[in-house]
Structure formats: C-alpha cells, structure tokens
Length: 253
Image 1 (tube, rainbow, N blue to C red):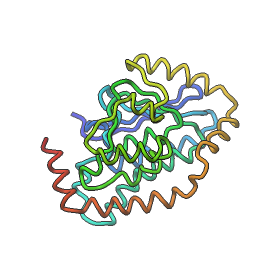
Image 2: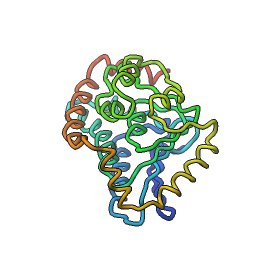
Image 3: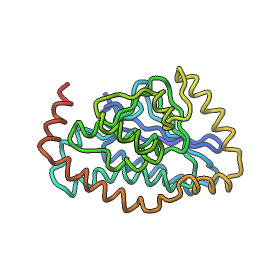
Image 4: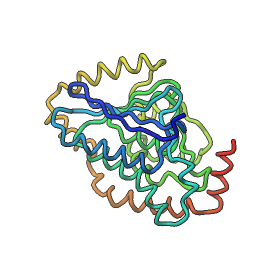
C-alpha cells in the first residue's frame, strides 16, 4: 500500500493539470505542500501553458487538509509555523501565478482543502463535494486560509463555516456562496464541462488572461506578510494540550 503522496503535472496543448494524491484522503504533509507550490511556480515560465487545472485523485475526497500525523509530530513553534507556512506558500503561489487556475472538486473537502478551492479562479464541483472548516474543533483555526475563503464567499459565510466547525456544508450551499461556480451530479458530467470550459478559455488571448488574473487578485499584495503571520498563530496553537488531545481523538475514530 502506498504511504506517501504524489504531485503530478501533465500538459495537453495549452492546459496544465496538477494532480495531487495522498492515501489519507488527499491530506497534505509539509513535503507535499512544498511540492505543490513548486509545481505551480514552475509553470509560470512555460509560455505555452495558459491555464492550470488543480485536481486530486480518487472519488470521495478532494482534500482533507493538513496531515494529522504530521501535526502530532510538531513540538515547537518554529516547526509549527513552518508547517502552516506550507499552506500559505501554496495559496500565495496560486495567487501570484501568471496562469488562471481552475478547481476540480470531486469530493469532500476540509480545512486547507477549502482554502485551495477558494484560491482557484473558477471552481467546478460535484454534488458530493461537501465542505467543512473543522479547525476550531481541534483547537486551532482557519487563520492561514481565511483571507482566501473570505475573499471568495464573504465574511458572514466564512464566519458561519468556522463557528460551525463540525457541520458539513453542501456543495449547493458552497455554490450559493460562490465558492463553487458550477455543481454537477456526477464526476463524468463535471469533467466534460471542465474540458469544454478549459479548451475555450485556453484559446483566448494569453495577455488578456494574464491581465485578468491580476485584476481578480487586486488588493492582495500584502498576503505574503499576512499569511506568514497567520502561520505563526496556527503554529502556536497546534502545540496546545487541547489540540494534541483532539487530534489523537480524531485519529482513533
């Protein structure tokens, strides 16, 4: 059985697809967060590619957020901050990429996975793509991803999700709040729609797409500093007895 995650990039004509996988419901250890950041940044220099599709393997889970195994191994503030900086780096890479990014959310999404979906410029999902911000339930909070989530769905909806930390929100709810742009009844229908949309979009003027990317992310230039500060908050909280006990309880279920 595979125990490590993978990040794979494939390019078809003008479209790059980054696929991530981890056997623990597509959760992210720090090494894989760095690999995803690198994969996004490396495409910036590829002038043939005009957009990126972010996807994960499997059918039931898009992304389970942070790796609980690695969270339990954190024993000081430096390593805690470093781990959560991994999510900060991915979101900033998506934000500053010179390619538009399309999300493909086929299944349930928790915590940092919601942040990844929010950082996409256009996001497709299936009806099975329920979402949850469970961080408060384990003693931390969605501090690193909050700016991306709030930017996409607004402060009231972000607050609702955060405070209802054990409640799944439906894909339809996420569409109403504009996290998801389109929701489909099956993965096949979603993939067909993504293919049509991506093929059409990739043939537009690349200079216009790049300028539109900058417009979509205006007023976020301070996120390089902000998300690092937020990483420090989460890095401190993950050391608490409350969080350690909560993580062990979740793992034992």
